Length: 469
Ligand code: FAD
View 1 (spheres, rainbow, N blue to C red):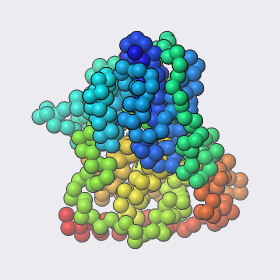
View 2 (view 1 turned 45 degrees about the horizontal axis):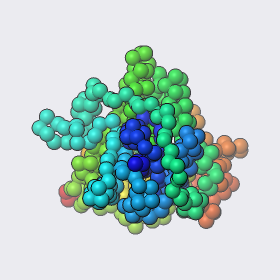
View 3 (view 1 turned 90 degrees about the vertical axis):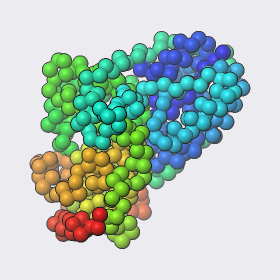
């Protein structure tokens, strides 16, 4: 009897436990991607990027003599239809960890089992299942370093090879056409611009990992903080959609460490920050929506009062070069350097005293490497309301940060065109990538700061010191 392999955020063939098990089970394997309410509810850029990833996965499966069946609807209805159309005896998938996916998957598993179908979920999106990492007293970790110390010496499963063959059925079930789903419809900015920066699919992700390990990881510890350098792995979009697995990155990092490459340990640590984010989301799912530290509910966030300042932030027109460069990088590439993310989040939540949720939602809409756990942890860390967060009174100064991390202004000049005789092509690309109705032009004058750095800092610290929590 066939096995249905339900693809979600695991768009690869290598190191895929569910695919490997499906092939081993014997009988044909029918891979399906279901466009349901959860994928439909994604922000503009993540949904568009998911569509590209699905298209690429379909091609990769075809090269192996297989196919990706596309269906739209509620997951359980679609899976039941497929079971009855194909006579499948099992449905396999890779586990997800956000509360909405858990609710859906739990219901699907129970229902299929009650139909007499083998319904089984597999690991692979994470190296350490969140419930397997415990403190000495049996609780969960709220601080990164002890979490790291707990997991750093654990054995991580070696990556599984791509199955040599994916057995095909005699006849394939009917499939929707991806184009009919219009997954890029909400990209009201230049998707063709962002497309140039996408690293699509598992082959490209593996090639980038190889390049990173051979040429970059040695200096990663120092370079990872310099946004003007190609100094990080740049694999977050691939990890977010499972085009590469964390195990593959971990083992490559371990090999580099054994070869004495200096930055390798720091890279392993960053991979574990991703695991930590999932650990926190598993144990406290409210991190996605509410202040993780409940005392922060009393903080006087300005939800609407600073609407024009928030718009300037979104448009990359705050008049603070580090903030604007990073926000423009976001529109053009769909990604943002980690230091940029920390700077723009600090400026929004501290200088503009705007609720972190507003920033989080904007990132939900704009990031092609959007990840529910890492995005929420990043925002709450930056705002000061999260676990192991930077304290609110530590306000990043985006002017001195630029002097420190962008000494030669490589980053600022790459992304800001105004006031330059011959702007960088990427700085000009911003004007093609931004929504038309923003009406910006490279010939505009560069704005004065919407909130000067010192003034914003004092305002935020006053509010913090006079808080009644
Ligand atoms: P590298 O430096 O090469 O690190 C390797 C991998 O480790 C990354 O691909 C990522 O999977 C993981 N990683 C690194 N740093 C972190 C971190 N701080 N938290 C969690 N995982 C990390 N990351 C996302 O993948 N998706 C998001 O939606 C996201 N939103 C963020 C929002 C804010 C406000 C902040 C401050 C950070 C956010 N991050 C997010 C974390 C981090 O900025 C990115 O993972 C990193 O910039 C990706 O670049 P890279 O792949 O070159 O990372």
